[in-house]
Image 1 (cartoon, rainbow, N blue to C red):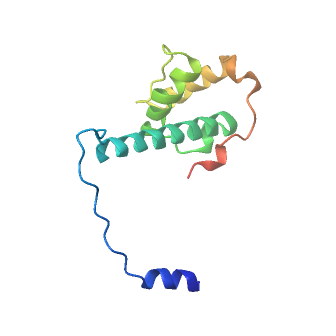
Image 2 (cartoon, rainbow, N blue to C red; image 1 turned 60 degrees about the vertical axis):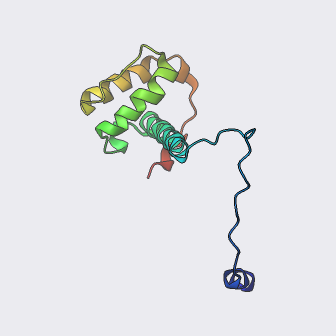
Length: 121
């Protein structure tokens, strides 16, 4: 658009950071922000994969160790208790264990169908 072309043509002067004050809060390093973002992305992916499994079954995805590791470390303890685990290092066994957890779960008895299953890329 014309507005975008006008913006691209402008020269923007660099902004100088304000002088440090001894009373300023300590800044969080960029590495911590990146780690937090990665954890959030992993948690989102874990739940999307889990709901795909619940709604579409084990044949809906080419399950890899990392997929099951994410589900085991993020979803399983929150939904099935801190002591619940699946064997993610052996995908077929891990999928069997996850199916058993889902089948015997009181929490998932009224789970809505189709939740987040189509969001996995």
